[in-house]
Length: 359
Image 1 (cartoon, one colour):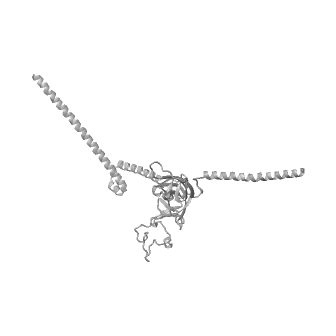
Image 2 (cartoon, rainbow, N blue to C red):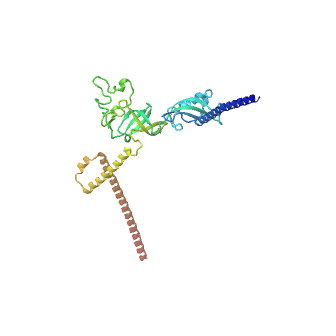
Image 3 (tube, rainbow, N blue to C red):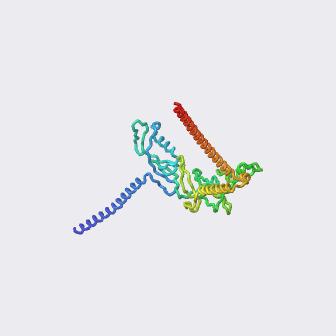
């Protein structure tokens, strides 16, 4: 009997231990599922891919559905979301490209006071193009000028690279032919009757947006064009510009784009212009003091803007002289009036004195 009791007790212990071992992973699994649910709830409205330029955002918002969509509210909400496509939305920090997975968070919509619009909260997935400062992107060169280079990213979004963010130690701007040049212009006609623009990418059927007649940036040593034959150029995003719900980028191809050494050319040119103006003013003063006799020759050789400046100074001086002369005339008239009054007062007093003596 004792042996049977011992064996039964051992079996019970083994069954209890197996039950506890089976319950432990179940409890761990339930805890893990609870943590995952909390994490999903906290991640609501956040991005799924925050590293690239394209992100999928789960967004939520409250919409007001017009009464015309009372029979089909989903169509009304989708039409409202369609109006957000290709526009920069600050709440999503990017340009909305596509929306999908529309869901109504409430089974009923509310109508407040006398407003006929049905108000309800919704959720949807938005695919957003959201570039950030410091990101490296690839664009296609479509326009070159001495001041900047214009690119297109994904054939849609505009990018501008200013001159001070182009390494001018290695690159220089090469001016193209004049637009009205019949031999080398952008619309030049060759002997075989073909247009000069129907070459390269256009001959292969590819689209191009660059105007060759304006010029291009080329390498100083090799002579290669900026962007190569495919016009693909990698740049660093240094700024974002939002205007009329449209996003445009400011790029740089400098090795260190955020260095303070890249001073805008406008500031340096403005400073140089002020210095040149000061030097020109000093030269004019010296010439006036010296009293040179070859005034006609110097006027012929001067810059037309300098002539206009001299004419303006002369006109201002004449106006000042005329104002001074009119002021002097007014003062003379006042002094004459005072003298006349004094003379009239003296004559009246002398007449009174003579009448008293006669009396």
